Structures are given as C-alpha cells and as structure tokens.
Image 1 (tube, rainbow over the protein chains, first blue to last red):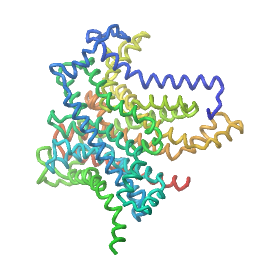
Image 2 (cartoon, rainbow over the protein chains, first blue to last red):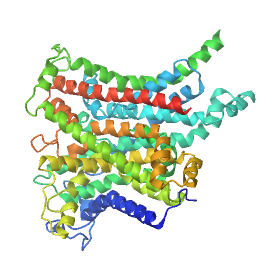
Image 3 (cartoon, each protein chain N blue to C red):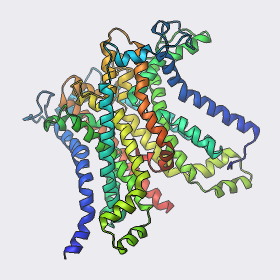
Image 4 (cartoon, rainbow over the protein chains, first blue to last red):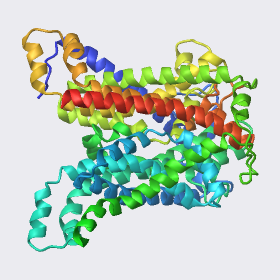
Length: 283
Length: 297
C-alpha cells in the first residue's frame, strides 16, 4: 500500500528525481565496466561511449599478466576481511550480551562512551596506530592491522548486538535454566541461535571494512607479500609508469568489487532492516 | 559470598575482551599521539624522544608550504560541501522512496546503497576516471553537446567541487540508509491525519515527517560531518592533495607530515587538532541525542 496519494504531476516529478539519482549512482560504475572490457586501443581520445568490441584481456592482464598483481593480494584482503569479521563478531557478542542482560550501574555510561568511540574516524587513527605498532614492534605485521580494524568495527558491533539481545525475551533463558540447562548450554542452544541475524550483520560490516582497508595497510604494511588488494593495486598502477593505464586500473577496480558486492547482495535485506539503528553509527 | 560475587563479576568477565581490544587499539593510540605531539619524534626514532613542548603546533600553524590556514579552509569547504550534498541527496531519496510500494522500495534501496560498500580508494579511481580529460565520462558527455574538454582536477575551485561530488557519491548511502530506517518508524496515522486535513505533500514533509525524524536526521548529519572531515582514501586516490597543495585537507596533511616527511611529532600534532574537532562534534552529538531521547520517550 502506498502511504501518500500523489497526483499525476507529483508522480512524474518523483520518477524524474529517482531516475536522475539512479544515473548518478550507476553511470560511474558502468563507465568503469565499459573501460575495463574494451581493448586498450579503444580507450583513447576521442572515445566512443559504447564500446564496439569486447575483451577480457584487461582483467586477466591485471591479475595474471607478467607484471600483474596475481592472486596473493586478493588472498591477503580476504584474510584481513575474514579475520576482522571473526574478531569483531566475538568481541561484539560478548560485550553486547553483557550490556544487554546485566543491570550494571556503569552500563549506560559505558554504552555512551562506546558510542562516542565509534565516532573516532579511521583517518585520524593512521598516525596513532603507526606510533603504537612501531613502538611495540608490531609494525609491518598483519595482526596489528587486523586488530586495529576489528577495534574500529567493535563499538558499532557492541551497540548492534546489545540491541539484538534486548529483543530476545529473557524468559526463554529463564525457562531453560529452570529446566536444568547450564548457563553455557542455554547460551549455545537458545540465545546464540536467535542472535545469528545480528551477528551476521556485524560480521559483514567488519568484513567489508577489512576488505576495503587502504590507509592503514598503506602505511603499516611495507612488505608487498602481506599487502591487501587495494594497496597492491595502487602500487601496480604507480609502477606501470607514465600516465595511468586506465583499462588495467578499471579492470583491477572491478575485480576488487566482486567480494564486497557479493557479501552485500547476500545480506542487504538484513542490513536494511537493522539500518535504522545500525548503519547509523558507521562513520 | 562466592555465588553472588561471581554473579556481579560475570558482566565484567564478558566485557574484558572487548574492552581490552578497544583500549589497546582505539584509546591507547590516541593517548600516545597526544604525548608524541609534544616530542621531536621522527619515523626512524620513536623511542627516547625529546620533549619539545608546543613547538610542533607552532611549526604546523606557521608553516608556509602549504599555509595551515589554507589547509583548514580547504578542509572546511570540502567537509561542508560533502555534508550538504550527502544530507540533501540521501534525505531527498529516502523521502522519494518512502512514498513508493514496499517491494519497489527495497529493490531501489539496495541499488542506491551499492556505492556505500565500495572501498573509498576504488571510488577515488572511479571518479578520477570520470574526470579524466581524454577518456572521462564527464568530458565525453559534454563533448557530445559541443563543450570542449575541461581539466577537472587542475584548477583549484573546480578540483575541490569535483572531489565533493565524488565524496557525496561515496557518502549519501549512509544518510539514505539511516533516514529510511527512521521514516519506516514514523506512525502512518500522523501522515494520514495531515492528508485528511488537506495539507499539501510539501507541507506534510516539513511539518510532520521531518520533525518526527529529527533525532535520526541529526545523527546522520553528524556522521556525514565527521566522515567528511576525515576523508583520506578518496582524495589520496584522486589528487593526493595536489596540484600544488590545492586540495590538501588536514587528513592528507597529517599523512604527508608523518609518513612522507617522517616528522611524526608534527603529524601527531595535526592529528591532535583533527581529533579534538571530531571529539567535540561527537560530544555535541551525544548531548543532543540524550536530550532528544528524553523528549521522545
């Protein structure tokens, strides 16, 4: 059912606004696709808007070419993303449960401090983390960067998980305990299964953050065998020298999008549902 | 005694791991930064550093290449543009989608959220390609209607405007997501009541819908503001602050000082300035949020 009844003129205006916005949202990506799948000889001025012949050479070139970046950085990015997702999910579940179920005197204050922490944006963490990891001998290691991303995603995660646990009736837990189940069994059989949708959202957001990471590994991971895809791609386009090879860079960008868009497609309905409160705080 | 003490300790045991993580990798780095901003630390020398008081801040504020005032001005223009653009586009789209049927809405919402999940550095490459003088979409479209090629990322005001458009593309999604969530929670009755009273749609939006989503709207505004202030990846990929520092924001300045020049002390002092502004905004948000929450509960 439509909430507001519009006149014909109003409908036309609304359709036009949405169409222009769709063009703004999608045309840049379609342009990247169109450059990525046309032969290099067609990516010169004056350029035709629709490519006249198609090729996969750019995509195979950036990945497997003689100077290509290979699959290593792709694996690294997956490792960063998945590790950040697992650590964030565990920490957020523990913290969210504690804040949702125990009436702690300092609980509300803690939740507000955690909310404020989630506002500390990643750019202003570059120098601090460089100092911390260098001073503690963790400079150049993957675990330092992963823990940094997990810590960045955990405040929002705790906030979301506290909301998720609050929606699970406490009577379910009490009933299980009265029937003789241990605290651990109650957690595993009753509470966690019901919290899975929330945990998946938290883990997906952290995965996307970890996969997309750029500024921290750019500075904190000098060794190219441990660099994630985003950093390897930028080094690659720098190395191929004069000007930018747009067909290869477009192909490389396209390849980078596959995992995040897949994760997003699988989870988007859930994401949108918790969006009102969830996406809210992700800076 | 045992059972009870254990009961009271349980939440803290559960919180130990997350709080340790947050302390070590979120709070401690900032504390170190405050300390290092008063030292002469360099990239090669982080231990046994010399305390220099406020000298780093003096050096940063009185720097000439680029003048700090111009960095702050560029940051302010870029942030304000991003804020207004994301807020306007995100809220406008959320309102437009609010009035269509649920099935169409969730499909359109998913499409409009695509830019939100893309890495900022990839978004930077994407828009740099759009603005490319020779093979960019922008000039191709303009060329089709007879306007000659424009060098988008060279002249200062044009380059800043071009960066703002790219950053709005990156940032409107979060506003759309949050405001859509809030619109779904506006009681339909108060909108229907407005219609029965014969109010125009524009009037219903201004007088009924927007006031009802005010707390969320403020939250979205703050998120857009802080993320605009801290944009790094996108500008790095598009212009690296150039040409000639014309698009150098505070986020790039602190990277340049600390990582490229190796002057960790000065980089830390820019971080402290940026951090303080962000923190002030976050505190302002929490205060507003609590006041609004009280009003609505």
